[in-house]
Amino acid sequence: MRRTGVGFLEVAALIAAIAFAMLVLILTLPILRLRHTVDATTRMINDLNDRTAPLLGDVNTTVRNVNVTLEQVQTSLDGVNLQLAKVDTMTSHAQNISANVANLVTVVSAAAANPLVKVAAFGYGVRKAASARRHAETEREVRDTIKSQRRAARRGNR
Image 1 (cartoon, rainbow, N blue to C red):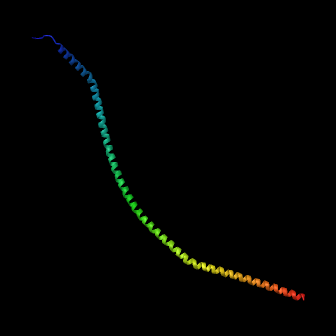
Image 2: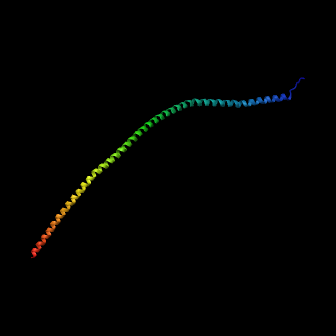
């Protein structure tokens, strides 16, 4: 039993094969364009890698230099803090010294002022007494003059 004719399944398979071939041909052009796009993207990524590698190296160098500088700044700040502690100690000592000097000045002033007040009071008393004496002498002379004028006036009336 031989068949000489083509069957329905064979025709359907042939149509499916031709449709698949046409689909492959139709998709070949976008796939080729996609390949060019992928190649261009790959070249761009490689170029970006070539350019960023030195930049990353420079960034690493900069970060290392910044770390070294920060360590130097920290060392300097430690030194400054140490000096500030010394200055604080010296300021405390100077404050104690100035308080002691103030107390000494108060004691000396009190010791020197008491005799000076007495001398000033004595001088005032002497001036007052001398003034009173001069005033009393002037008053006595005036009285004597008035008495002698009255006596002379009484003798002249008699």
